[in-house]
Image (cartoon, rainbow, N blue to C red):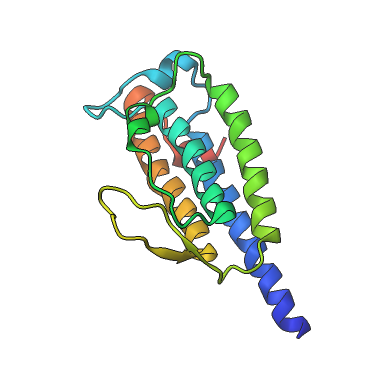
Length: 173
């Protein structure tokens, strides 16, 4: 019994560590970037470093709320999508990074205290997914990791196009 409890604790701590590691990689793309640069498009894409940061803070908050609330009637509010990938005029990189720290702490607490990573939870429906889908807590946490990882790649490209810096070289500093 003790071995399985230790394994469960280790799995939870590993998930927390992987999320923290991926957040750190994303943060590297924001080193020495001011708010104006964070709003600047550096490719043909509409994406910006600040917009990606805004999205990642929101997406992690969203999915941890889904885990906690387990609302079988939840729907994605697509009206919010216009501002999802934008650093709002009143937002700053520093402010969003502090907010992300708080969100990350909440996520770590949730992972440590949720009843079971195998618990099945309802996901919100959306126009592209009109049927309710159920994910395990583990899958939902891994989905957050996938979002951060996915957008870390975007951020690295945007940063390199902005000023030539990239995560690989900046990790050494």
